[in-house]
Image (cartoon, rainbow, N blue to C red; front, side, top):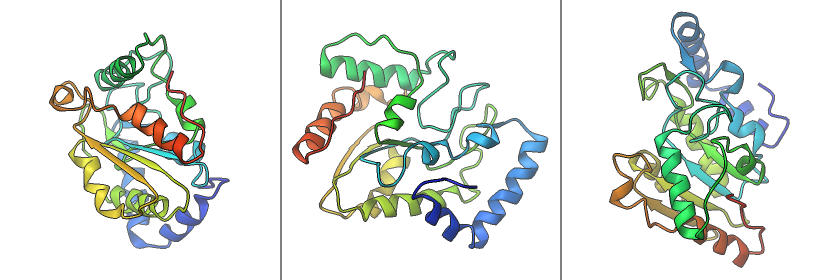
Length: 219
């Protein structure tokens, strides 16, 4: 894999460790025998689109969407022609509430990624209709290393950790330069327990502006 950006050093370091080779061997079999998402060439899309240098916001998901055509390598994002999943519907509802606007956009969050939002699932692959099917194959070792590297950045970064899986990574975030915001996950099962009304999108942009950074255009 060639990232053509400053994530390459991370990949080159981790590929020398046995766990990543084990993941590669495991996935080679999984892709041959099962429906696995996203497509192989899109597994690392988040890293290919948002460099370490440009990362100023991190949104952590869980694992990819597990229905056909949905997963494209970004947390919470789907291709433009795919129906917007419930979690993303709720994310858009929160943005509408915070900014008093009505969103008219599809589910493709590539524009966020290009603005410096790393849309990262700690688990990078999934089996059709089986959420968390790949939670124990070792992906978190790789994505945790990515989180640690972002934590080391001197310039300010906002971490939006939604749900228990994402909040687990908070233990790596000890840099006082950064802002860490947590809340329940935006899924229909938990959004009303504290995701709605968390104010994360405005808080994020206020922090970025206060630190001399361009705010994210959420809509």
